[in-house]
Length: 447
Image 1 (tube, rainbow, N blue to C red):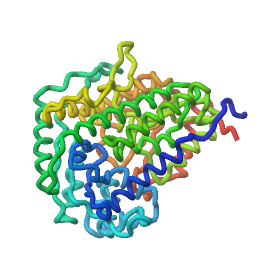
Image 2: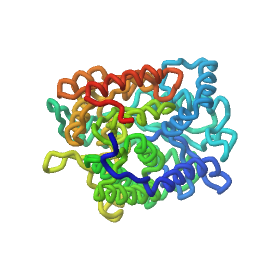
Image 3: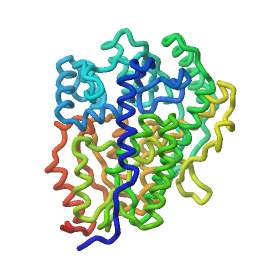
Image 4: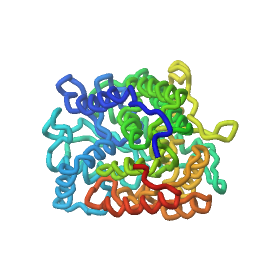
């Protein structure tokens, strides 16, 4: 059986790669430019350190650790280094990759720096069970680096309503609790760096953060089209920019440009997978060393149109008047944001606490409801769940998710693995499970 739809490469693919590599180069060479380096998670309220100046570059821990995981040889050495140091093998595999690189004093991108570029400060938030602990260990390894962490796990932004969900107002006291920590964090940043803080840079960064997360969600909305303009494996190389610098001008501009290209693909009927016959979604981080499992799906004419992870890690969403899930609205101009520091932080915190991937830390029913919503709105035929040993947080309640999705009427395939430790993924076994799952969906290999 031949192709059903035309296809073509994404025109922005080269630019996407250049931006990603520039991020890791800028971090490594920041001191050469007289700038600062800081470390923190991909979910950190990253607009806040941008108030220190335009020459402050970060390394976000999860995508950096995923880059290590993709490099199998380096990842294994990092894992072995952490185990030799005495850190347990059942901890978050992102943490262990990151820690291993620090212990080995090696950078994943040796073309920019052979040695690990130590940050000038750490600015982190805590929603996952591992986030603050991650950098407590880094602080032990790099005792001179000052550390500040913001607790953001204080109120869900939605409640489950059967197989659906509704947003709820975040209590003012919860917003104030986080804002007060952010205000303390700004004082910490000034003390740690000796630099004065610039509220206008913060304001601009907050607006870019909102632009980035909304434009990415708008792009994910386009995945409702048949044929899907993007496949999930490609989306991993695109969503990552929001995990690197969502509060940056370059990221917001790139996502706006990307949306226009993907919309054009939809308008012209350009497919990511030209033989698309069946559509699936997945849930959380993939096994980064084995992304070819998504290409294996294509041999059956199956495309994964995305996941709660790719949609909700860096995309911000809201319920629209017609009940659909769509990109979250944001102020049209930076001038529409408050000028008062506390007021602008409150708007920023309230916006960010709606992040979809934060919600199911509170209850697995919220993840089930969001995935059911995606399955229906994006017209999928089946669902793949990764029983991911590498992430305790996003895998919490996954067996309950499986039962809820099956109850909602969707075929569900589960596979075991680890996002960051390639030693815990069985490729042959996973392909065998895919074979059986494709058979239940009525598919045979098209080759």
